[in-house]
Image (cartoon, rainbow over all chains, first blue to last red):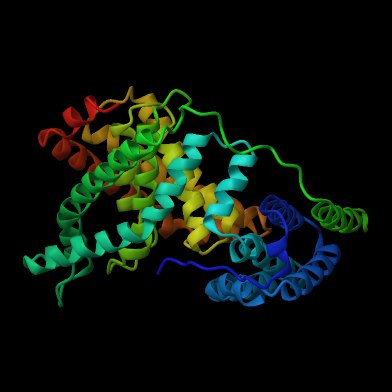
Length: 235
Length: 179
């Protein structure tokens, strides 16, 4: 199911979304550190995530790829060594959780505002927000089209089919699935365009002003950057 | 894509939304790596035909990546999701441009193949960058390479069939008056 909702009581909610994006990018870059500083960084990051109240959200993607992580850990350990096994596991773990801090604390409309403030043109940001609002509807529509096909006796799976028969059946039915979805998406795009034109989208200058980051955010970013720099210089 | 109209951006954004919703809603019963490429490539290639501009597929994929990241679709983290989606879009765009935007089953199949393989290439690159020995990654991906290729080609051919069906139904004529 499509996820909604953010952790309202996290202290990160009081920061600018751009600060959270910058933090996530910093974490993504930090995965290139060697073992000792990487382990230290991971420990600090885990403490930070827990303090921010988003530990469960950060853990979720790691749990989702637990089998891959375990397999890589074992294979790397057996064929290369424990150091590499730990480094690879930490890097992949950090990479999959890097943006969870942003996701768990930022509403989609806040992200859109942040992207606009970072220079995304107004009409692209508008299109993105319309698309985001349509996600749930499209999810339901895909299911409805599938159900309609099944009601007409068209099945994607028939018990006893071999993999090849399933593939053939799947291919045949896919056309009937995609064409109505494309038409529906076009109708929605046109309706959104008409509504936006009626409200004068594009006729007024962009409403988002390039607001500077609050001082507290700058301190937070500077602290994390200093920590990262210290770890980079650590040999 | 700078000169694209608001309606064209809305179309691409809606196709992006369709892509992400398909990832969530369409759990089809084939447990083969890369099978999502069938709908992926079909929608990306249809988007690049509906909005015939260089970069249309990449723009659709980029918008889909932002949406996917925000609804928690994609199991390798935000950066990997964005990179993989963009690579798929770029692969489609490059092949569409090289083929002169020709509308033939072969051109679409090749573009689908390029898009799905570009997505796989990014995932492999991320694993190698993360430090997984390249030999392990490449050996472990031989089967995956074959299935990604298959579904990329099928996705391209599906897109060709979709575009042809839309053309016959007068969809492109409908769009002409609304650009």
